[in-house]
Image: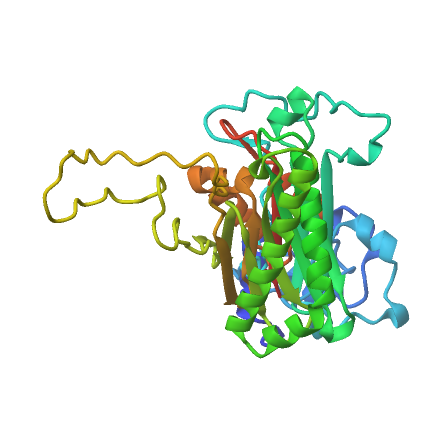
Length: 436
């Protein structure tokens, strides 16, 4: 009778219920009228006569072999009488076939649920409150200069899912200062020829109007990329790395040049109205997994693969070109011959009639990479890059949260970017790309 039952199902039935308890409980809890037709084939021989009245199950204690242990037959699992009352008798009085019941799910194959997001990591909580305290002061004649405390955006194109967030830092929230980080997400073109741009600007910490400079840098680079997006898409598809680097370097220099011109119009020094600029280009073509990073200024570029973080920020030379006076120049060697005076190696001060040299510019950063399915690419400013590099618990927490088959939603991503670490209170701006 029970030859067709898989061994695992019969073993599970014997482990979940003892020889006497489980079957007796199902049979005695309901009236005999609730028995489904065909239950006689599933009645354990050892239980006949103990848990069911004689004559109801169609058998007697004499029918069972003496000394036989109770055995579970068939693939049908007994269920409480309340469930039987809700389902009612089977249509036509037939018992479902053993193959109609789906096999139990294997818990080892089910993905582990994502751990809950945390308020902070580390041994102690940060000093500042987790929520905003003070708003920045507003000018009634210049309300366009106001920036919101938090910006959140996202999209899905081709093989990638995009999440972007910018949050005012704990220190700025407490002091009533504006968010110095700016975030721009834009799509240029349509269909597989579309190009996604994410721009992250960071104003100087002590410069007045730093948030305005960051926002202008994002808008200007967005306009420049948008007007050249068709050629950029062709270069990305054809893997013309040299053309990409030179073209994006030129667009970045023009953007920073406009900021320096704006500083002159405001009567400020060139380094008093400037911003760091970090950008990411993502083609919408699902067959193209090339990701392009470019920009100037500090920050972080990380890749999460197989649960491990890797810092892929491109390395740049700090000083380029020939050394100049008072900036990396070696001490002049005395020439051969007699000297009437001693050369002490003291540099000659610059002439007041010559224009002062411009401050050294930030080096251009550029990197192209081909993503793999399952990768997560993270572009961020120093507000998140510094704690990621300095706090192992934050790296482990975000790796666990972002290594799931599905990317987080907007609210979950915002909560992840706000996980605080004591000693880091700057603005948090992060752009993450999940590869399908």
